[in-house]
Image (tube, rainbow, N blue to C red; front, side, top):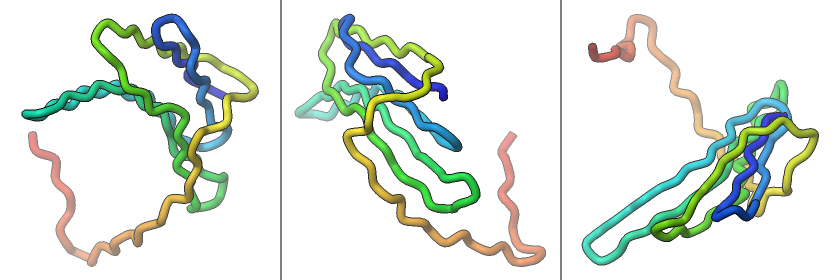
Amino acid sequence: MIAFRVSINGNVVTTAGIPGPHVLTAIISSAAGPTHERISVDVGGLASRQGSRRQRHLDWLGEELKLGDQVLVEIVKLDSADEPIANQAVKSLPVPKRRAGGPRLRVAR
């Protein structure tokens, strides 16, 4: 499987991977308001079972960062990965039915 090996300041903090159909993400964020600032790295994903509509949301990392931190995401192919720190079912939302001749999504150009 494809996996992300994530290091912060030279130390491997997690190796995240999901076998089968999936979405895997590594996100570095900065959010600032009038009274606070937060910099973080999050690694998570969405796992699907082949032939099933049931999905699970998985998290491996949610770490605050500070100025000067170095984050490395190495893309690797492995047989196994670390267990996620959180694993929860995704509540499915009903898929809206489109009326015949109804409006279609249009892309602005």
